[in-house]
Image 1: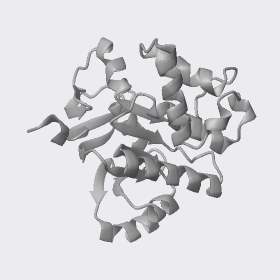
Image 2 (image 1 turned 60 degrees about the vertical axis):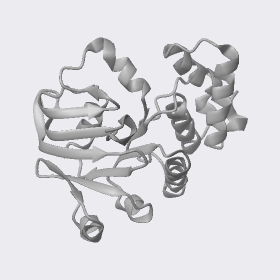
Image 3 (image 1 turned 180 degrees about the horizontal axis):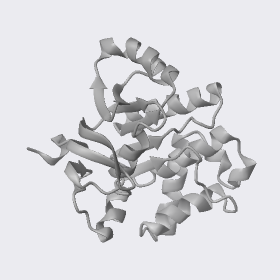
Image 4 (image 1 turned 90 degrees about the vertical axis):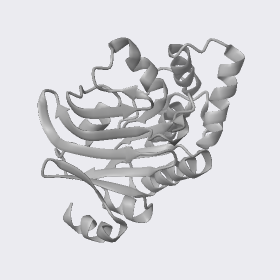
Length: 238
């Protein structure tokens, strides 16, 4: 089988931990290039624990997991940065460096991942800022931007290393509905135009009703995919 035909993310019978406590049992999930996937459920059902397992922040002790070509079972500490370079991660609270400019925030990430060519870095930074509609904000500091603008910068940061997948943990949680809608449209465009897989944790049913994708539901210590004809019932029950 060709490498590019393999799933980007694969879990088989995985037990997902929160710290040392199991929160989900028997997780089976395959995410392929170009997929747009939601992980939904009530607070405390293990959604974010799945994300943390994907980025090797949480250990995987039972079952199997493979993300971006890395085996999560016993992954070595030295390999985790290389795994994370193949993905972009977007957080609810943006996690930008407030006293650095937008450009400096993005340059910091490139330098941290070993990119030292100033001209090439400047080109990459402008490319990702253009992609998220923020090319005029390069010299602003995050505190000078709105919440929606800060989240666009966070998405630009996630795009820097041309990731196989963007993992977004409640990326619209701190935004009003109109701004959240803009962020979802942006992620949808990235997914369609670049073929970048998107995995998004959310508890906002309006989002996955308006921007359809595959939906995994966390409930009763399980996380299972719902078929399209089940999504309407899902919106009522979570």
